[in-house]
Length: 300
Image (cartoon, rainbow, N blue to C red):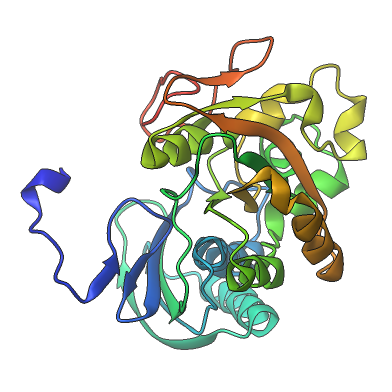
């Protein structure tokens, strides 16, 4: 599809293929959220409103950009459920306050099908961190824990902690900005679709392979009660944590910066010379895809 689109002008510093574009020093991202695809009845309208802002914050954080403004388009079926819309607005407002983002405009239309939101967000990005800067031998890091939000979406009886993670994603924005300012990360992106989907994207952008040690994956205590949590940790998505690479000699600085910002970080693997993206000792479990079956561990 991208072959049919003209080359971007020189004012575009970062074009398609990253978490956000960067145009004249501003990072800009757009996200679509569709009822029945991105949320179900485990999220109320206030949750949907909060999450619609938080997921775009996560994209900008992964570029090393500070979110500043957002516009939101909403499509809802007729007759309009005003109580639902008002609760959605409450969630949007709560997230905007949490992340210091200003809602500056938008649009409301009628939808013949499910409810639909489109969020466009931007903010200053003085030092973009892309997916393409990793080097062979770099360590692969993630923030927080993985799989908790996926448990909230997929388990028949998810624990309260999992539902909270699903409803209120908290991307590590201050740490991401500090990491970019310090120039420690060679490549960076957010974990929205799951490690099995997102890591191959970063590796492809950098022209490298990768290895992940499943024993190193950070595990929330709630998931420790599950017999095999790895499929949730690598395949479920919706974590909105940060994934980044850095040279081994930066370990002490990375850990110090994480501690300063109150963020847990874990080294889970490394980038290798061009080749496969592997989960050591086992095949990749099934992972998220918008368009049906896909091969885990491969770019799509």
